[in-house]
Each structure stands twice: as C-alpha cells, then as structure tokens.
Length: 236
Image 1 (cartoon, rainbow, N blue to C red):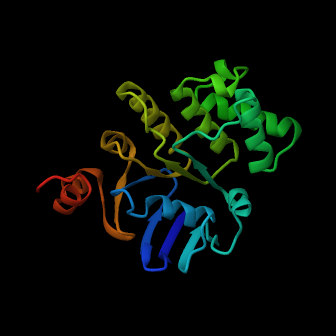
Image 2 (tube, rainbow, N blue to C red):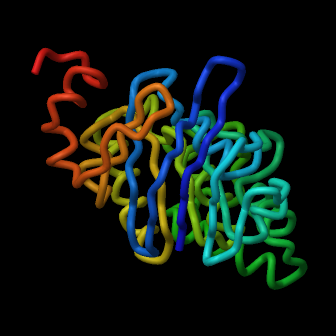
C-alpha cells in the first residue's frame, strides 16, 4: 500500500529526514517512536504534503504523492489525526464528520451523510452525534478526530500522538479502536506511550535526528540497547 524510499528533508543544517525507507501493507500498523526532534512529525508533514521533500519517493497504491498538493493527497487516500483535536467546536459531532466526508472525500448529499454515519459508528460516537464538539470530554474529542479522518475514506491513516493526555484505561480503549480500524487500513502511529504501540503495532520504526535507527517487531525494538539509551534515556 505505502512505499517510502530515500525520503529526505533538511532546513539549512538541520536534517529532519535522512533517506528514510519503509513499506506498509493494508492491515498493518507501523509505530513510530523517537525523542523530541527526531523527525516524527516531519515524516507526517512530508507524507501529507505540508512540507516539500528534497528527495525520495512516497507511493500510495503505486501513485507517487510527492509533488501533489495536500488536498489531492487526501483524495488519494491519506488522512491524518492530530494530537490536539482540530474539531469545529461550534458544530455538532455529526456536522464535523459530515464536513470531512464532504470536503475531504468530495462526497455530497446522501452519500456524504452515509459516510459520516458510518464513521461515527466505527468510532463509537453514535450517541454523541448531536452534541456540540466543543463540549466533548477528551477521549471523545480524540474519537471525533479519528472519525473525521475515517470519513475521508482513507487508505492510509496517520495518527499523531492521539493517545496524549489520556488516562491508562482511555489509552487502552483508544488502542482497541485503532486495532479495529487497522483491519481495513494501513496505519502509521506516532506515540510516546509504549504500551499503546505494543498492543497494536506490527513493527516499530525508531527515528533519531531524522535517521532511521531501527525497524523491528515491538518486543525487539523496545529491547534494543540503542532504543533504551537514546529514546527511553535508560542505561542499557
């Protein structure tokens, strides 16, 4: 589904992506970890088109994304959910998701409405559909962020620290939702909560100063001497 090859980006002397390579199939979740400044969010910015790559290739379903504007990449199947939910607070939960289906997926009328209802159902928000988005508790705001992304009918779902700020039971609930969603999508999840990734990710990609340090199954990645020293700050 996704092939990233030689993806590179620097700002002056600061390298945020150093010839990064990886691939991802439907039904898989790639967890991404690394210390602050490792290039995690920059990776998402390059995939979504918020930032322009200096070199490399990002192909989704065989289609080259580099050079495409962000809205075109969304129509091709790239969706992103943010750490800080980006909802329209003065609209209802349903209206937020309908907007995503209408403008993200380019749907209209009954087709957009069906897509919105389906996304709400998949994310467990049916009972909240008439609530104002700005009044939701944090876990439901996170669910809404993911429902908006799902409403665009993505092939690739990018989750940017969506578990941040949640309690341990809420993290478990969100991880269960991601596990269900990944059965139909390719998912990349940036997260600082190891147990969340361990529950869902098939592989962990470790970034350090924009460089791919390691890509391995969760147990192997978390046991790595380099990961323990660089990411977790522990003496191996």
